Image (cartoon, rainbow, N blue to C red; front, side, top):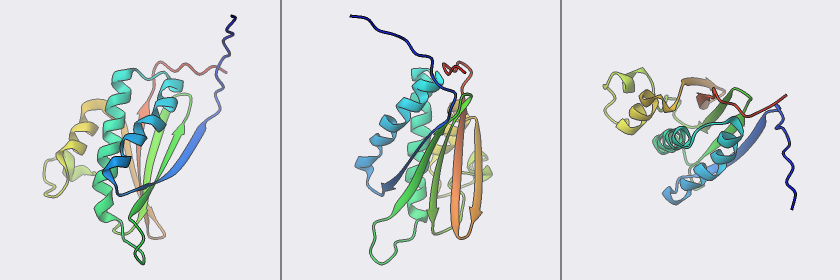
Length: 152
């Protein structure tokens, strides 16, 4: 049996999905991120930490999401992989408050889970961006990958 190795493309990949407010669905985030993280050369330890940070921010975002006419609360999760980084966004309509911000790092947020701050400060996430536009809030967590396997 012969196996040929093909260099990976430097083209970015993108996956989008709606995540409903059901804790049984959170493990799916790991399955979806695994491909992007492996493609980018992230270690198993970095993958686990990044997944935990994403899961924590998703859980903390659900209380901010408005139900519309009995629909289940859901957030849009967007996973984008680039040759040098992975970006995971969660986007929702509802309260346009950041899930994690400066107050979580300073220890002042009364209703913010400590796990978010710990995951972000523990180098599982390299950068956090937050924006609102047209009544929608988006938080983007970015992990840079030093050992990228992608080839031109």
